[in-house]
Length: 341
Image (cartoon, rainbow, N blue to C red):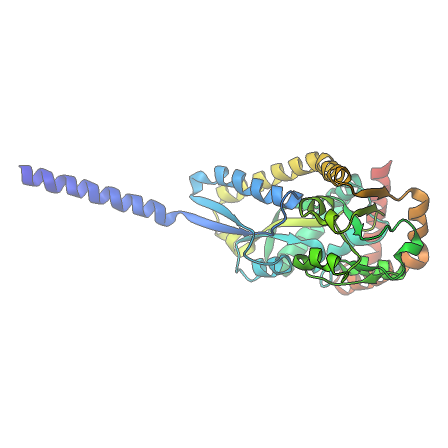
């Protein structure tokens, strides 16, 4: 009797262990590759997204872990396309050279404000971006977001058209590079990890970068002049999931990720202005010379001679990719005017 009872309990224990092992064997961990960009919208959203997604996916046995040292920024989108990472933070300007639609936001004088960016995104651009992510990058966008406004940080003041002459300025997209070259500056490529040292050694005289990235990376220590010229001010990013990984998830998991993505994106836009203002004020409080170009000054730099070559080249590239570049440019200008009213 005792012997049978003993073996009976052993059978129950074995079954429990097998069930526990089976449960954990079914658990699935996904990696979200991002960048080390503390204090930025991208950093906050990727962490919030993973946190909220993990709560929503608990019953599905799926979890997401964020890794900000896995890949460099420009390698993230290719990594999700190739299936080397499950999810990534894809940055629009990093791939605008091959995907001109990703450079729409960088065209000079077109999108200037958060309202204009959101109007373009919700009016037509979101679907164009989704199509490109799916067809060319094997990815599904779960969140479409934007960095805080891009400002020009320099070692000496740039408050007039003449001040651009000969300035070595680090840029990260083709449209801005072409535009500032027309203003007399020298677009200078430089890896993000080398920016601070590049400023100290005068490899560059300045750079366009998000306000919150500049603030939290303390770039104001090396470039104390902070100027808002409205040049490519709002640059996009997206939280992407590999399309094959997406298809392997249950409908319930897909629905949860879609819902969480929408909620996180809405929260980001609600906090966008206050977060950006806090970073700009933080630099001012630390001694930075914060300067904003007025309408007359912006009209001077956004002259037809400087703008037309950039937009004409972009339209040609968009046409080559199967988009009607002129129609898209008209759409974004129309939505921008509507949003400004």
